[in-house]
Length: 190
Length: 190
DNA sequence: CAATAAGTGGACATCGTGTCCATTTGACGC
DNA sequence: GCGTCAAATGGACACGATGTCCACTTATTG
Image (cartoon, rainbow over all chains, first blue to last red; front, top):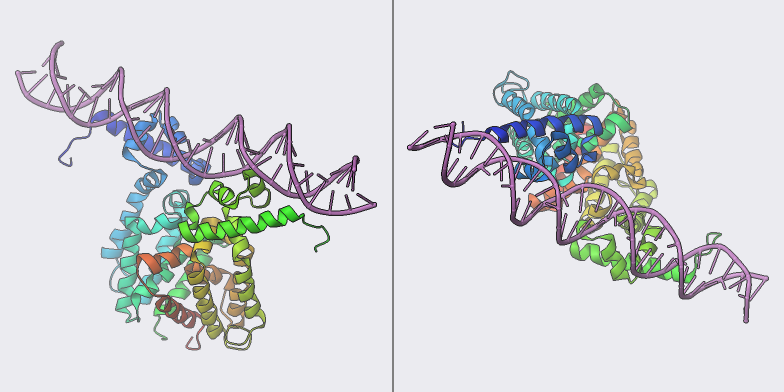
């Protein structure tokens, strides 16, 4: 498929690993799952597991990949306000809403994948960053490079999880607060 | 001093531990320092170390304590715009500026203390949270509880560190972007 | 100068990580 | 079918950090 063939047993084990990891992440919470757990649950040796995925984050990332790709596609070519065509403030609010949905649906994965510093080094973060930055530029915001990270920071899994579970907020409350944030920074009133 | 006396050797060792930990954090970066390192550098056994500080975060917190207290005092009773008297947007911007200074001066400590989820469980976070929330209330912002965390999120040590070192921004750029954020959300234009 | 409770330090058990390599197994040409 | 060979496997291993436990030491108090 990609020039080089993948052996049948390799493909089978990849599937087993992802299936087992997804199940364990959902059941136990990503941070509580060890590489050993995954290997055992997948019926696979440690060596096999490490051959493909150097750490838990890589597995969670692989599981997350398709969802993130779908959203990225929509941002680039979907209908407004998520896709191009709407004013920046509206697009940012729509992006926030979509990310809230993603965090809500895949909290266990995201918490395993993008926690702490490693968050910034994933390809996905780079994409979100570029997107929000382009909205800032479109809105003529001064120093967009300094404003991007603050606007992305509320989407850190830890922050979302804290609001949602420790503070007892609903996904709607969070999304609407972020919409207000978007409007305050990029809105027409400025 | 506090009802129960602390034995002389205990006091001496506490001082040794804090001194050694501060030195190591600054030299090696907090995440790279093990409990063992600290015990050894302090000339103290593991047991002694664990007796007082259950983990690295507790030590960093103890080292940070006085600086955070000073800022908290200023927020409550200092001159405007940091202290009471100025309009909410200005006070929030001043708070951001003060936090940037704190992060800048004690990055190594903060990175050891408030990383990841544990950040939210420190007493200091509760204080910052209450302060920002009161500013939101004073500005008649809707649903202040949902807006607090997003406004505090950019101050997460990981975010600051990423902007400052990976992205190469200056402390001034960050502070001024946050000032704009403060004005966008709480400013008079809304 | 006891008596005693607080304090000490390092050995130990435990756990998770990541590496290494002898063995197995699937793919491919014949 | 079958031999060949590189890819793939899996579990043993070494390592590093954590946190606990307890026999011993030391400061304090009357």
